[in-house]
Length: 438
Ligand code: IMP
Image (cartoon, rainbow, N blue to C red):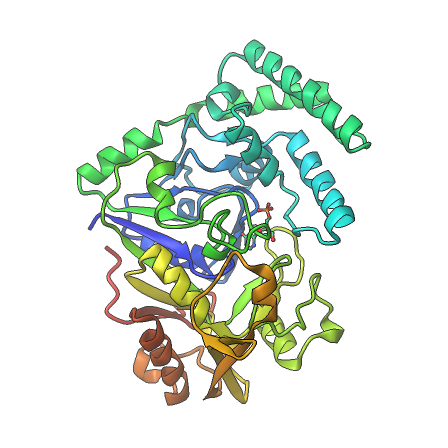
C-alpha cells in the first residue's frame, strides 16, 4: 500500500518525527498535512539533534518534502530553518497554504490574555498565531502562499488592506498596540515571497500522481488526536485536524484505504490546560514541579518533557488506554508505535488506566467534549512491575518480561499490534516487530 499516515494518538509530542524519519528511508515523498510551527519535531541522527517547526521531518533524508494546503505556514520561521539546514532541500509548498502574518501572533497573545480575564484560564497556546491564521482562512480573508509568491505590488496591497483591519481590532477591541512595523512587514514578506517562489508546487496533483504510480508516500501529522479542533478536548485544542481523515481534505487526494500508524508515548503528556485523567501533576497548568508527584517529576526529567516550541514543562501522566481506544476508533490505526518506553525505566511500578470511574459509574469510553465530567473522573489503573535500563534492547525478546507485559497489555486493550518500540532517541535505538516500512 503506497500511503502511510503517521498520527499522534494522544496530545501531541508522541515522537512522530523519529518514526517519520525511520520510514522516510524507504519513502519517495513525505507530506506534512496540518498544523504549523506550533509543532516541533526533534530527530537525533548519529548523536546530532535536529529540531524543526516548519520544515517537514522528511527533509533530513533528502526526500521530496511537501507542505499541503491545510498547513498554516510562517514564512519567517521556514526561512530561518532553511538557512540553518545543511543538506539538499527538495521542498514543495501548495499554493493554497495559508500564511501566518505578524498580526496573527499579536491576536494569539491578546486572545489568550482576554480568555484569562474572562474565563480565568487561557488555552496555553504556543503563541505562534495558529488559531488566528486558521480563523482568517475559514473566514476567507487570509493570505495564501500563491499570493505571497505572486506579484509584489498586489502582495503589498493585500498586506496593507488586511493590516488596516487587524490593527483596528488589536487597538480598539483589545486596547493594545501592534508589535510589528507595517513597512518592515511589507518588505520582509515581499523578500520572503521572492525567495520561496521556486518552491511552489501543486501538492494535490503531485501526490495524486505519486500514489497512482505506486510511489511510497508518508503523510506526517502534527500535534495529536486529542488536540483535534472537533474531537479533542475543545476548547483546549489546536485549530486543525490531526487525524487520518484529514489527510485527504488537506492534501487534495481522493479517499483511499491507507495504513495509519498511531504514535503513542509510553506515558502521556500535555502542553497547556484541559482534562488529563491520569495526570501526575495535580492537574496544574502551568506545571509547578514542587506540587507535582515524584513519579510525574521523574518521568518529566527522564523524558526531557519540555516543549520543543516554547520550552514549557509538559504535564505528565500514566498511559491511558481509555484515550487510546477513543483515538483508535477515530483514526483506524493499523498498528501502534510505542515511543520512549525507556523513559519509564527505573520506576518500581508502572501504571496504565484501563477505565474511568465517575460518581460510582465505571466506563471506558471517552466523552472528549465534556471537560467538567472528565475533570471529575478517576482513573482505574492496572499496575505493572517496573523495569531497569532497556536502552540496549534491539529485539523484543531482549526486553525484560515486565516491559513485555506492559506492551502486550496495550495490544490486548486496544486490539492493535505494537510494531515499533523506541528505547532511545537515536534511529538505531528501536525495536521492530514484523514492521514493514512500506
Ligand atoms: P496552538 O496550536 O498554538 O493554538 O495551541 C493550542 C493548544 O495545542 C495548546 O495547548 C498547545 O500547547 C497545544 N499544542 C499545539 N501544538 C502542539 C504540539 O505540537 N505538541 C503539543 N501540544 C501542542
